[in-house]
Length: 141
Image (cartoon, rainbow, N blue to C red; front, top):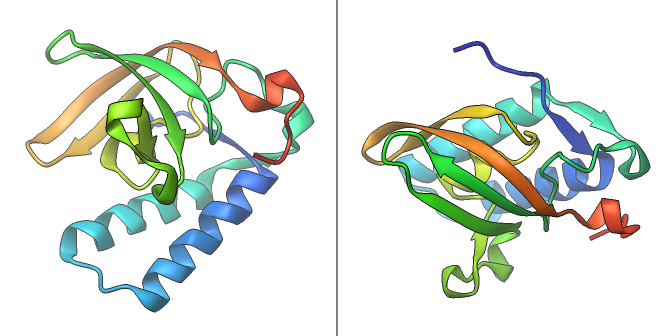
């Protein structure tokens, strides 16, 4: 599957970079977490960084509410993509530092994404970005 160029806002890029640096500096990381951080770091290094005012409203940014379908099992899910300290799966808040959160960030409505999960590879399709802070004029979430 060919990788699509993703978009990340400059504030999101900076905050995620800082988060990863702090985790690597202050936390013990098991193999799974190191792999996830590597994947996210690689993804950010390949992303196009844009101003929050220039991000399309169909693109998943931090604090966006996204609906996607798992193409392997047909399950539709809706979550906000948030920073780890805000994560609460019962409230529909998924950390960017989960395999699915890392996979979704930066992609847009209609994109099909390969996602590494503990059971192997899964394929997700972004159905809709139901809410995006930047589309609402919130540029530093």
